[in-house]
Image 1 (cartoon, rainbow, N blue to C red):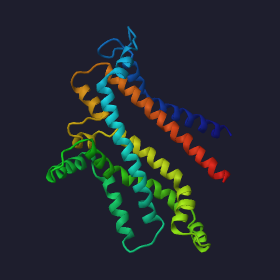
Image 2 (cartoon, rainbow, N blue to C red):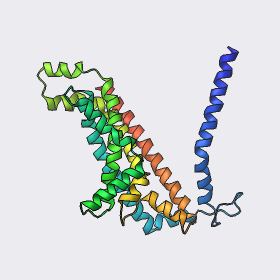
Image 3 (cartoon, rainbow, N blue to C red):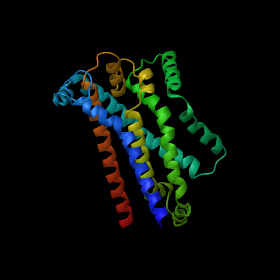
Length: 266
């Protein structure tokens, strides 16, 4: 009994230490965002929240956040649709080139993002497409859509195909089976995939750096300000970005819980 209690205490302490190390950098940028000094010094001698007001009022910050949001939202919606049908294609149905399809759709995950971004930039230039935030959407999809497909496929493998077969034996059409059975059962996986897609696109730097052209996303702007012209506005925008990401995660978890409750009631 004593050994078991000791093990639990050690595991709890290990978990707390891991959490502390993970969130320590976030604490440091929070302190930097409320310091009046140009660079972070600790202990902080003068505190100020003026940088938050400047970040909210800044037209530059508004533009880059809008660009990042457009890219992330489009990538999220497209990844959910592509991932849903892609997961059904290799998790629910048997066809001739199914194994090859699995390998090809998951292959971009293993490419280094810098190499993938450079390859896409050269491809866009070769076909005469001017890089912008729209080409960044395509670049993000090449890397993120396979991840969404894999997440939804895990969910697709978990439910019994007999449910679809029973509905088909009762005369349900393919559209009805998809709408009444497949989509509700896969929806938790679809939401998880959408959440991952949004966060991966929102914080993506390598692909955005090569494919946004004259446009700029939030990670690019933060990097540019860190290498030249640093000000406390940089950690302030970083803190606001973290809070926005946390809010999206909480919203997605609440939505998933409501969907599960609704499915259980039905």
